[in-house]
Length: 268
Image (spheres, rainbow, N blue to C red):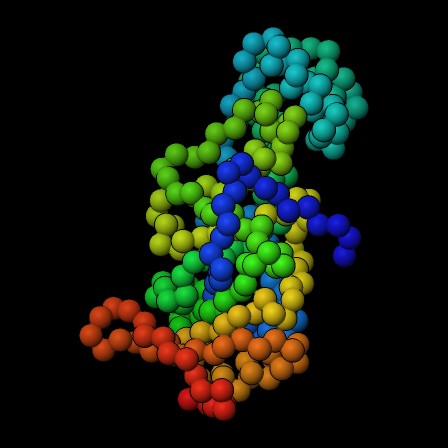
């Protein structure tokens, strides 16, 4: 697989011991059988603002010179040789040139960065509906202990402003700045209580985990009766030994009641 570079952001805090992800039954079977999580690109997500940060143009001659040098050194693929030399030797005053570069950097961030999205919550009605096929799917809990790759997950910050980054900063030191942009979302997504694992320069692949990292499986309230047996078989194939739970609709509140399933049970 080669070396993986997990992007760290300033002020990283330890995630909860278990983080969760919602799946259809078919995808959950793959996760349990392979003990892995899918690493996506931000451009694949359902939030059109995801990682669509706003760039601030360089100010003054010094910043413009730094920007020209940074484009030539750190991002040679963004332009041809002649254009790079123009950036190095001139101080462009046409904002459209900066906007063109910003668009290229934005697309690069959204299509080459790897992200795994997880949540603090295992009982979210909306996420079971949106990501687990209307409560027919499952929610899997993953360990974030020091031996797990998921220990590198970062907490999402929610707000009302599109993240803004100076073009000079991201072209001279892109990893921390990129991580900051990937860890901010609109306030309307706050119910997801999201954490993210962010990888540089690699996306759309299965990230292998240890079988011990699969800690729990919560089955949706509308799941078929054979779902438990199918999930147990998938876990057996990889040697994972998660605890299994069943969610049910509360009869008195708009919430899910979650109870552990007996180890000997194979159906509901």
